[in-house]
Image (cartoon, rainbow, N blue to C red; front, side, top):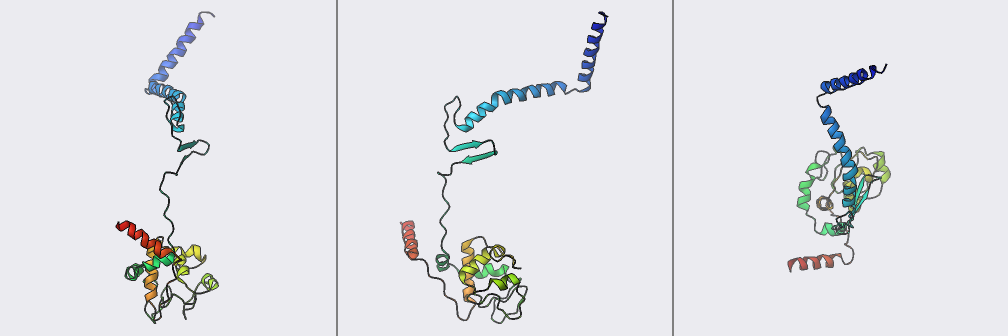
Length: 221
């Protein structure tokens, strides 16, 4: 029985050699596994310390916070430029271009006409739209959502409708989004001209014209 032990050891060694011969990348896999383990053990703490602004090198970065629980990097935005203040629609309209708005209205002509007495298309005729009752063009089949919306089309309401019609009047069949406020102002300035009695622009808030003028003077200097 004692003599059999070497045979078993030789047999296991032979099987091990056969396994390595069947898998020529066995050595590479072992080396990769060992290297990965070493990186996890020694590299991760160093990386964490560097990101957290500490570590053994005395680095400091108070603007960076690492949250492992949520896999989220949170950077302090105190040094970043703040979003510009929203300019009131009334101010944008004073600087809007009706001719530019007419060019922008090119995307609307597939559904609407703008001339007086123009026919309805997929959408209603838009002559005199500003100051007109909502859903009031004769012969056009409005959605129930727009009928229930009611009221009068003011510049403010049209601006919100053009920005995101589906969000402003949920259920409306019109799908339109003009993301940029200055472009919407140009289009509204054009719509003002589409009337025999142009609806006046809203008055800018008190102090807005003076602030605008002061900013222009600074820019010139």
